[in-house]
Each structure stands twice: as C-alpha cells, then as structure tokens.
Length: 364
Ligand SMILES: NC(=O)c1ccc[n+]([C@@H]2O[C@H](COP(=O)([O-])OP(=O)(O)OC[C@H]3O[C@@H](n4cnc5c(N)ncnc54)[C@H](O)[C@@H]3O)[C@@H](O)[C@H]2O)c1
Image (cartoon, rainbow, N blue to C red; front, side, top):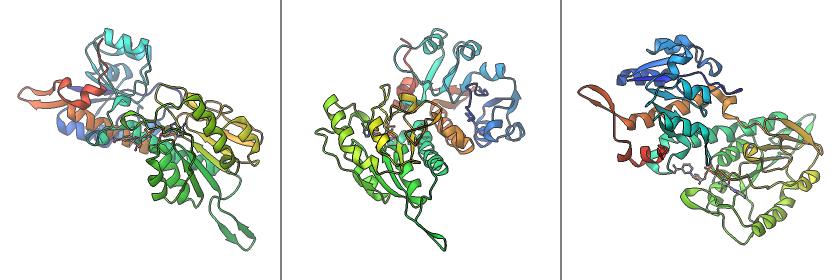
C-alpha cells in the first residue's frame, strides 16, 4: 500500500502533510511512501531527510496518484483529476454545503476523510488537526501583535524610564484563544478574555487572565463543545457591553468563529475609533469575514490609527512545528484505518469505528 505526499499548491501554504519522522513510522508499518520533490522544503524538511527516513522522492503526479493521498489543504480541481479512482484522501476539505471538488472526488469513488469533521471525543484528540493548528494560530497571533505593537508587552523598569504592561483582550476562549491568553501572559501582558460559553470562565482564570463577564441574556454553548450563533438582540447587547472594555485595550486578539457561518462582529468600527493610536487587532476570524468589519483578509491595514492584521494562515508561519503536529494527527488517524493481514496491509471497515465514520464524507 502506498502513501503520496504532494507539495501543497495553495499560495503561502508552507506546511506539508508528512515529516521525515512520520515517514519513518509509516515505512516501519509496511507502507511505501512517495514524497513529491520539494514537498517539505518550505517547512524546512529537505528531500534528503525524507529519503533517509525511507521515502522515495517522486514527482507531483506520482504522489497525487498514490493509493492514499495525504494533504494539508483542500485539493484543487487539477489535483483531484490527478488522483486515482478509488483512492483514499486524508486532509482538510474545508467544505460547507454544496461543493464541486467534493462531488468530483465522490464521483471517482475517492474516499474523502475530512479532518475538520473529527469528533470531539477524548480518543480522537491525538487526531484533531483543527485543534493542533488552532493552538499554533493562537500562539502566532500574539507574536504577530507583539511584533507590530510599538510598546512593550511586559512591565519594564529601566534607567531610562518604565513602561506599564500591555493590556490584551482575547475574544473567544476556545483552543486558539486559550493559547493566545497563555502566550500573552508569558510575554508579561495583562490579559482579559471573553467567551459566550460560560464554562470558559475557569479556564481563562487558570491561565492568569481575568474573565470579562457580560450579561447578554443567553448562553452561547452549542452542541459538541462548539458555540452556537446568538440571537440578533444578544449580539447587539454583546457589542455594546464589550465596547468599553475593548476601547481600553492595546491589543485585541479575536478568535470567535462558528463553523460554516459568517464570523460574529465583536469589534465595531466605532470601538476601533475609540482605541488608542498604535493599538493592534489580530483577527483570527478573518477567513469567515472577520470579528471586526475593518479587517481585510490576508492584509495588514491601518484604520483610525489602529493596525488590523487579517492573516488567514497563521499555522503556515510556524510551518515546521505546524507540519509536525499535523503529520502526527494524520498518522494517528491512518493507524486506525488499516490493519496488517496475511496479505499485507489492508483497510478496515470504515463504518466500524466512530472516528473513521465521522470523518468520511458520505458518498451520497
Ligand atoms: N477532542 C475534544 O474534546 C475537543 C477538541 C477541540 C476542541 N474542544 C473544545 O471545544 C470548545 C471550542 O473550541 P474551538 O477552539 O474549536 O472553538 P471555535 O474555533 O469554534 O471558536 C472559538 C471560540 O469562540 C467562541 N465564540 C463563538 N462566538 C462567540 C461570540 N459571539 N463571542 C465570544 N466568543 C464566541 C467559542 O465559544 C469558542 O470558544 C473548547 O472548549 C475546546 O476545548 C474539545
């Protein structure tokens, strides 16, 4: 059974779906691994390391034509056309509703395992790529804010004067938000955080940050650990109550997303106008339209004296570690899908396990 690791084709995508360590593990399990030449170069994994780990360096078409294709980002039409009928695809699919790419894969009987469908159960945590990448995004968002902020994050006392700690507000305390809080605390900032799910209060406090309590008249806890969308009244009340807290912030990191829905507006233009010049907003919801309407996707802009960062791929800026975590998530999922029989490696029944069943996009 062979596994193909193509080079990611999306502009700015520096991650790769397998690292030399994971290739070594697969080769030991009995897989043949085909890595497209240069696939790991942007993440600083050279071809020579893959070859040493037992992979064969192939061309892109060979990697895409493998029995199991592992990718980071949603495949393009050309990539789907290069895949073999009946192959197994493992990676993000980034699909909401009707989707031509998915339809094309299903029409060719490709088994599409979408990592974003990973169920939120303890057994699946080691395969949860959405979480491993969100964690990195939360960390990198704060590093970005610190680099763009014209002041220190920590309290500084020097012979030339002293500075107060930066005031950071994190909106949304999920995986990315909690890592953003922890990173900002490590840099010495004073951190406040808010989430619509009341159960996050304790988690925020345990990281040394102060929860922002707002009475918006309803809870945002939804199914499966995700947030649900608030009513229009609750949204308006939330914006109003948050505004004073946000206007005092030097740095805001927003992470509020609801899967397959536009991101809620948490930082209005009016609030941005009230912020101090040189403040920074990093909007991790930029791909979903942004938690601030002034955010521009994949751009850094200055509006009313405030710097707004709209990068949509922070994990690609930490590509070496992001790839290592992602590759481990994939390898753990693949280990669940195959078994060693007398005739070598074979796929198990995908409907027999809750994890493979949930991640596989149904054929109809
Ligand atoms: N395997 C597992 O058990 C597992 C895996 C991943 C996440 N989780 C849990 O699921 C929860 C959600 O995490 P996530 O990172 O996927 O979330 P997410 O990326 O879907 O959303 C980010 C955060 O924004 C919050 N949010 C949404 N709308 C908001 C609004 N209007 N105002 C303020 N905040 C808003 C959400 O409640 C969430 O905490 C967390 O408790 C996390 O620990 C569990």
